[in-house]
Image (cartoon, rainbow, N blue to C red):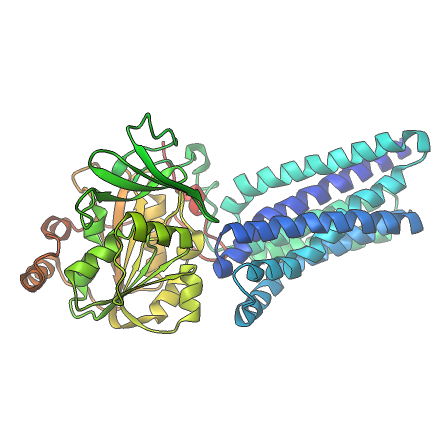
Length: 536
């Protein structure tokens, strides 16, 4: 009985260690994204560092276990691993800001961050399994079976940790809270192993440490409840919707009646340029991003592009505009043509997208329309110039970069506005009903930074519960009423005849009360955007 309990404790130790290791790896992207984006380089750095940690940890753990095949070594390794995990939420901000100031490069930034923050934890937790194998090995004849079983259990723990973190814990907990919880779970596992081995002192110490980590986890909790406890989980499914309501979920272009003109996989997207008899489309992975009327490059079938010109209705004296997000360049090139006195700056994450916009979507090469390739948030951190208008339109594939949605990001945007400036943002969601959580969470988050918020839904005639583009306008000053805004826009069009007719977008401004008590304020620590995007 005793031997069976001791053996079971080893299996439990490797299971918990494997679960925590992969859970932290999944959560680690949320730590790095606010500083370095969510690119292929970030994920490559994280996966590569964890795999390197596994290799080093397996080797080091085996060497240490041969020298001291004792349960004390196993408990010490688990304890150290838990403390390293617990240190991450307290060290990450300082480490990441140091790397940003150093700036070794787009590839090295996330790699250095991953090595410093997650490398030691990976090495130590990987060492748990070889130490457990050495302790469990009682007979050379069964050593292979023992090692195989323990590594299989460790891998099973990693599978559970991956799914639990991605599907439950990230939507439910803040990132710092999640990391502290992982440390508490590992410490609780350490206590159970000590109890199974009749080591009361070690068990009591581990219990106390687990309790402390659990208290820290509670103290690090975000102020809002998670999306799953808010009954969002039963409705969750991925989004495959084209702006303007068209459903897209495959890459079978021929069956969709489309001709492929260009294809390339970039570090961020599977890019395709496709067209039919009327329009040319830019597609990222499973969703269309931009479109252009063939033969008329400044026209687009996507109505939301005209709505982005609302920025100039709210700020008619603007001298410069910053666009975060390029796509096919529909909005920047339209403003470039319609308002020749404006200086325009575009920031686009993917250099391949910039090339496609120039080559396939007639983006003008002009000194008034500058384009830089950089993560939008990182660009704003590095450039302290102020702008009269900032337009946020940065979606990719079937989701959105969460680090461009948070309170901290909007505070940065606010700092980069000139007095009297406005922010215009394009989001996708529904105004009311069960699928409105993302919109309402945006609304609540913007209200924490900007005193004045209003929204202009695209295709107002549709039911308010349907998915659509929604244009946010935010500013420090009071925003004019629709009648005054329309008069001002019509006056502006007299000197800028190419500007779009915004009569209906202005008259149909959404004036209803937006309830926000049941949705979170999006923060770097807690921004469950994937779980807030709900589609039947």
